[in-house]
Image (spheres, rainbow, N blue to C red):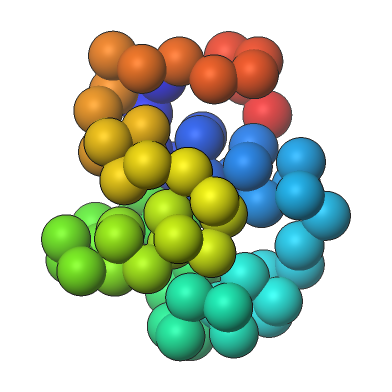
Length: 73
């Protein structure tokens, strides 16, 4: 499962808007928007911040071989 799909799935599962997740992870909501559309790739430190905000291990987000929830959002 791709990073973009996991990010969107986890954000929605936790009930966060783009803006809420961005605030929790200390990134812009525009960045979240582009990450979820695979138009930008986050820096490793940003992935760590996102994982912390979503309460998951960063490996869950970074490793495409780790699947969560459903395959498609």
